Every structure is written in structure tokens, then in C-alpha cells.
Length: 354
Image 1 (cartoon, one colour):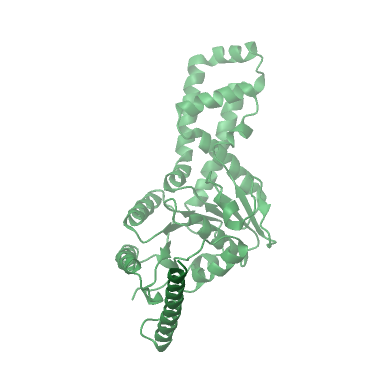
Image 2: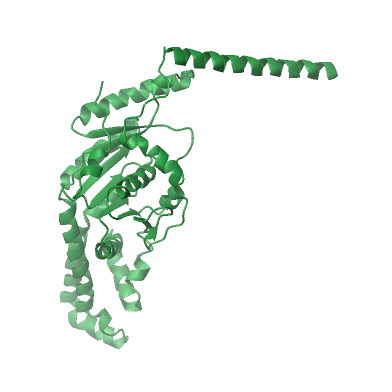
């Protein structure tokens, strides 16, 4: 039997500053990040959970409206949440017309530079806020890894600007004066802004590569695509030297739940095949299995209840073949029989009146 692990190791690692939660869309990342931040809030001084997903799932999970300003989560004194839309952020970065035009030019020249700048701006903000740990509920896999490539993206941006400066140096200065754009559009101002961002991002990236400060939690479901995506994610993270040693397998059907449905039985067999593969591929990871629930996990109370499964391996309520299980099956069959008898009576009455 595979070793059941929990996320206890995350709570015990007191040096952790950044916790990324990522994986394919639709595997329950937001629920996991929300619960992790709730659990961290019980052992750390202050926690900020940030969603960089434009879908604003955090607001749904906590059933409370969040914005780009960190907001205290209802019912907590040390848990804050914020939602950042990487695309909108740009409006704030560049208030002046000239700079705006320049940035949009630069954005077209280097894909990802707008996200890079909004991310840098957000990190700068977050670093001044002094939270003891920050949980990122990241958008699906690709975006996460792009965040980590930002220093090189900005490097390219700076090279482009320098090249432009060398080619059109004097002309650029004259043009800015001519159009009355003033100093904020001077090359020095632009370069300063980019350099500043690059510094922040490089500093943060150094922290991201330090396993004492940063870890990445992969969330997945026991299906082929998710296994494949997780493998790709783990390899990419290794390439970026980002520590990852926790995997959460969500939406697991447990056989012991005494499933009668043929469809569910088939799903359980299929899931087990992939779960076995996860344990084989990631034997040195902490793997936490979470049960598939009949309802969504929404609101602080539901999140708190579900958080138990993060700390102690899930125990199905009944085990096949025990006296309790047989008793339960008999009572289910009895009530089904009663329902069927009532249904029959109704039908017969209907016939008589017809």
C-alpha cells in the first residue's frame, strides 16, 4: 500500500515565503490554495493568497468579493486575499500618454512584457507589505512558468530599448520635446522603469530558486492528461530550479465507499491505475489524495471542513464486507423497496381513476 502523505510538511517549514499552487485548469487549484492559506493562517503570523487567474475564482471559493487590494477574509484576523488580472494592471503602470504608447510598442515587440511588468509591479507591492507567507493560486500551467521567465523577457526588452536608443537617440529626444511629452518619456525614465522592474524580478527569482523560501505544489486529478501535464510541470520546475515536493491528487473516488454503480466502479479502476503511476513516478514526493465530493466546496466553513483531508489521510466512512456496511446496504434496499411499493400503489390508483 502506498504511503499516505499530507501537507503537514508545508505547515512545518517555517522559512517558506512563497507557495505556488499550480496545475491544469479545472483540477481544483483554487480550492487547494484557499485551504492551504487557511491552514497556514493557523500557524503563521500573516498570510496573503493571490489569484493571478482572470476567472476570479478566489471570490467564489470564499464567497466574498476580492479586488487588487489585499482584503481581510471574513472570519480571520491574519488571512488576506487579492485578485490580480495581469492584463488590466497595465493601465495603472502607465498613466501618461507617451509612456503608454511606448509600452504598447514594446509589448508588441516582446510577447509577455506587459505581464512581466504588471507582475513585477505586483511583487514590488507585495514585498513592501510584509506578509509572512504568500500563496499564489496561479493560472493554468503555462502562465506560471512564464512568470519565471520574466527576467530574461525584460532583458530582451531592455536590449530592444537600447537598440532603439542607439538608432534614434537624438531623434527620440527631439520628438518627445516636440510633442510636449516632457521628461517622463525620456529614454532615461523608460530605462529606469524597466531596470527597476528587472531588479525586483531578479531579486524575487533568486528567492523563488531557494527551496527554503519557495515551493510549488502541483494539483492534479487521477486521469491521463493530468498525469501528463503534471510530469511536464515537474520537469519545467526542475529546469527553473524551483523546488516541488508536494502533489495533491484531487477528486479521488474511494472504492471502500461501497459503490454500487457500474460506471463509478469502472471510474475507480481507471483512477487507481493513474494513482499507482503517480506513486511510482513521484516516490520522493508527498502525495495527498483528496476525495471527490458530491457538492462544491464554497465558503469558509466548507473550506475549513474539507481542510481536514489535507492533514490526515481520508478515511472512507464504511468498508466493504463489514457488519456496518451490510446493515447500511440492507437499510438502503429496504427504503428503495418501500419507495417502489409506494410508486406501484400510485400507478394502480392512477389506473383505477382513469
